Image 1 (tube, rainbow, N blue to C red):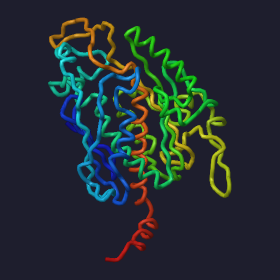
Image 2 (image 1 turned 180 degrees about the vertical axis):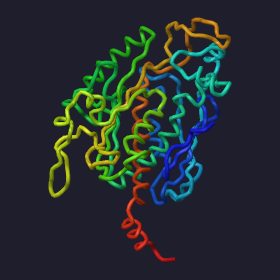
Image 3 (image 1 turned 45 degrees about the vertical axis):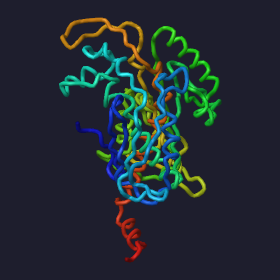
Image 4 (image 1 turned 90 degrees about the horizontal axis):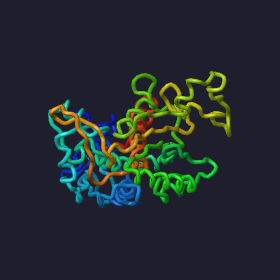
Length: 370
């Protein structure tokens, strides 16, 4: 199976299945000298683990991470970092009744069409639990970005048609509300709506917004390795995401150049912009302002109401899915979007170091003699 590796220099490879013995990630290309402990990783993983509220799956998993390599005396060594999270709450019998049919909205049919088999126990590699490796790697990337003064923050912007009010923005609420909304009033309304979804054996979708602050100008490339293109690929590779916007996104299609262009100006001797319709990226390269992206997440496809589908014999049937499923994916996916953004940005920063000869000369002029 190809396609489990992402990145150019800071390169991650995720592995494992939802109902296997465990899942994890191998990070290659991580610089030596980053202070790193299992607790640093665990803080990120705790944000996506199940069973934390009524609006997440009641599958109970501690999702405790173990660092197997690449760290010595509390610091990264520059060698591959391998991490594992063991599965401890698999109930595969919940899926036995759908072993011979294709669940609507899932990758069952496409996986079978491609490989000639599928792991029906929760989706295998196409399960949301695959994101454990991404989040663990994202924690490392986020620590590296912090040393460069770069902050990446994701949060729930909307659930169904309930959207946060920017005037009520409270960053602490992201970690304190079950919806990960930075607006407690909007979160309460969203929770009430989700309770009705659960009662009706249905699910909901929503929007995740991510903001990266203090990214220097000139990160990314102008053709195939555009920063916005790589961010979009990173976010779209998250299973439930169906669309990505940068800056004003689809609204630019109805704008005019006179209103969509961001005017440049000087502020305290630095190049800035009066507006940020571009979302911090021009021509595939960062422009120094906040990078703003949004991920549009579909409703959880595993719902308990009866659905129409077909089985492996191509017979039309009805099914009712059992098991433990999220009525909404969005809150647990917030940290996944944050992680993939951090991974993409840190990788782009490392690639950018080779863009100019004067950067290379400066590095090697200061390089210690052996």
